[in-house]
Length: 291
Ligand SMILES: [Zn+2]
Image (cartoon, rainbow, N blue to C red):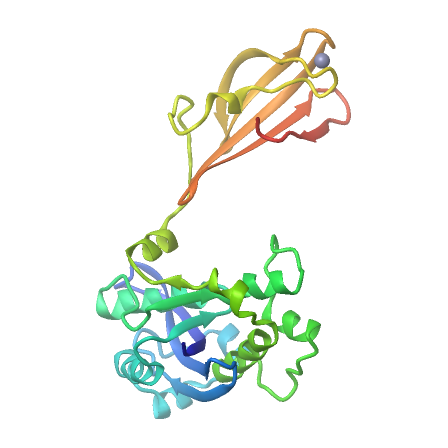
């Protein structure tokens, strides 16, 4: 399988057509890796923006791309992506560092072609969490590319950070260093209907107390001191994205505030529970695992 490590740069601007902010891709850089993890080919194009010719200060400072460069050397999004698809090949797997680039690419296909998919993409992997796991770094916080390079002693000095071809090359180098065929196989996703449903799924907070999606046991708490079941005082109320109630331990004569947050994710319902002792001074927080 041919791996294509992809990096994009984009410029944000207001678009009437998008009814809001639109991230228009202005540069695409990619490195192709063969089965033995050798870089065998590279792709680089700039794209002439059609929504806004004016680049934001952030883009100018980060990338040093100039409007003149885009005007003189850039092709349209459609033409550039046709060339890229041809270069990438039919069965390539697209790899990006975090899925932000993927979402922006999808946003551009939707904007310019009115479709909710990336036509050339058959396989995809977000290699950022994969590399982080391989490095033994806790994945609750996203690791930036430059930090990953630093940790692996990959020199970013010779490359212009934040230009797409250089970022793609650095990403490829990090990946080449950490790649292991067995563990990576589980990361590679086939791009089908379910892939897009998962990618575009917007998590929602469940506000209905009686929702059949919430197990009733989620609202049962036991006293952290004596372990007996806590009694409900009053009612559960929805407040700042969670159900809240006052609970009471008859044995210890202690009052608690309970908070249950229920979020519907693509994979299912995620429930977070928190119990806080109600003290006039210095409230104490206790995390309680779901029962
Ligand atoms: Zn108690």
